[in-house]
Length: 325
Image 1 (cartoon, rainbow, N blue to C red):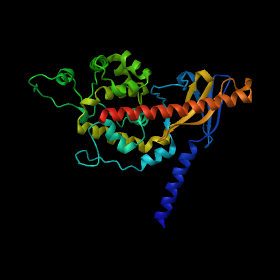
Image 2 (cartoon, helix red, strand yellow):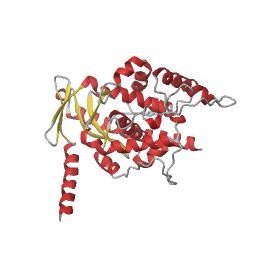
Image 3 (cartoon, rainbow, N blue to C red):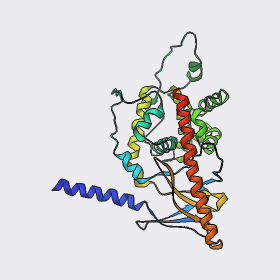
Image 4 (cartoon, helix red, strand yellow):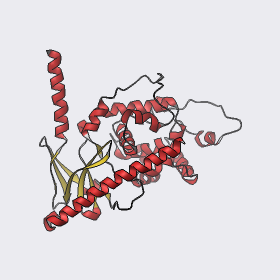
């Protein structure tokens, strides 16, 4: 009887958690801020300047599009049911640790955007630390004979990813020159710009900020810059920490709002295995446009999001096929 009661409380808790994330009302007020009321009556004000802005048109687009949105609640609950394996020495034949992507994909599913969002969140919350002891390279005077290109590029690294800003930027520039950026091309340009324009002193200051979003974005770039040098132990560590971070993901993630500047629209969005989904749309000039204009914009935005999902899926499948062939 006690077990049944505990189970009922647990299920009610999950249901309330999911329900509380639903947007009851969203307004774009004259103060140019987004006002959101959730189903649990909690209210939030979002600063337009701090939201992600896009002019994506959708029609005819053939490039990958990344929009920083939260994961959809049902998808998060599915991730929470994934058993986290903390035994990093265990061998599992069905799992692949050849690449960071292949290892994480088995646990979190979805596409590249899921990968980016999940790794970012694990960095923001501190579950994943690129200076963890498991990420540290062993000290050694060994030098290959003949000297290899990878040795020359990583010999000054203290960790399996370049933690030092100068070394990280240097490796990024080498990869760019050699056309080796891979999925770094699919990271938002603002992440790359932040990474390239932050010096070591600035990075160290970010390191003192609790849950620094800026530091997490820089560390994400660093992980991808050094991804091809990661060993199995490091890949297992990163996977384990990302999955652990998913346990509390839905509890503190507010709805994500993207500003579609070319439509004067604020779009609340989330992400599931099928791709981005539109939850709510409001317009800054809503009081001055006709119902026909409003519906036309809504239809165009939904069409653009559908096309983004289709293009992202096609591009990612092509890259995977090229990579594994």
